[in-house]
Image 1 (cartoon, rainbow, N blue to C red):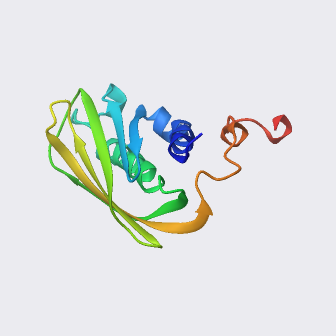
Image 2: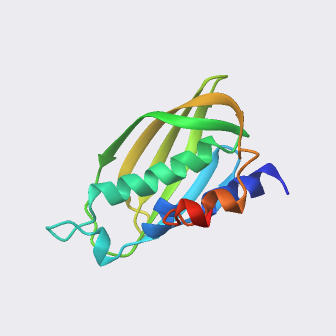
Length: 153
């Protein structure tokens, strides 16, 4: 299995993304695309997609993109600018690593609606660790049901 395949399999098991309705649809070195079908649970009190839902989508794409180089990379700073309100349809986040040094990865993420209109722009900076990614212990067991009791493990 290639490293990119391993990264894709690793992030396909991301519980928070899954419960948020986010799906990884494409990845390559320094790039990831994820999508989210807008559902009623993503809407705020005025009926538009809540900023946290957009942030979660962008953050997921960012995490995948900056971890494709084979080293654990963890976020240290992120910001999101909302450009257009949306109420329904599909949102797509495309993350591109624009710079990578020995210790810092910088990515931009463009979130668009189904018609390709910009909804948000995200920038993330991540710290590159000396650990391999995916981690060697990233077996299916490490993603077991978190509600299991210690006696069941």
